[in-house]
Length: 244
Image (cartoon, rainbow, N blue to C red; front, side, top):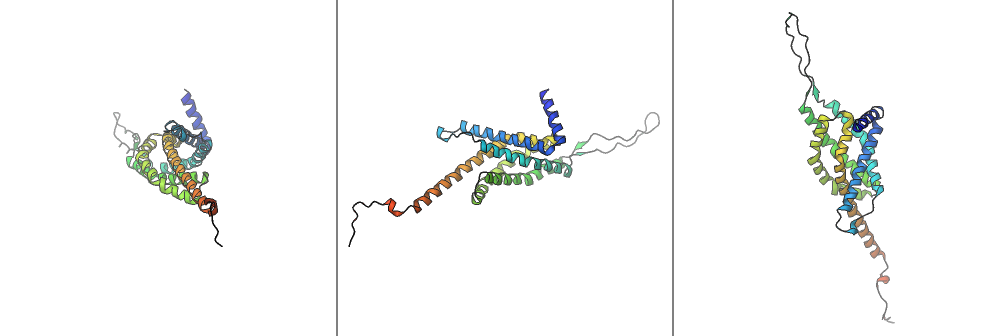
């Protein structure tokens, strides 16, 4: 009963304010994924030194990304719906005489699903939207974290290849179910509900890259400090003899 009431409330909100509804729903599910990721990082860390305090700002960044991208995903799904329609009406039944000598009016059979259109939908989504979404995710996270242009470029080199391959192993089946069985208003929430685990993966991947980049920055600062410190501070003057 509660689930039905929630579904009706969501449908009403989507019908009246679709973009706001998708933004709040997508942002919340993205934030949930990062929350699970941070808890998992601390739970499965090998030592207490690796455990960190919960980073609320990081969760806010994931919420912001989900809230921003979700309305665009809604429009993308609407485009796929019109570009590759799944349902086609079967051929009309020919007129035939009935027992009274009249003709039976032509009737239409139940709509059938075009699996060719379904395959085109999934392929288009994975070949266009999946890489685009990863590019937007890596770039937006880098900018919100205050990374430099070179650091963001390094993020793309380190993360994009592994992430897109992992995406193609998981999401085609999920999107097949999504496009085949879910009504249009529920496709973005469904994909993002499934994507909680995907967000967990991306969050862990992004966190690992952040640690690597922070370590690089610390090493660079140490090298710069050691080269800029005057030579006299690293030498002792005890026993120095001055030749006249």
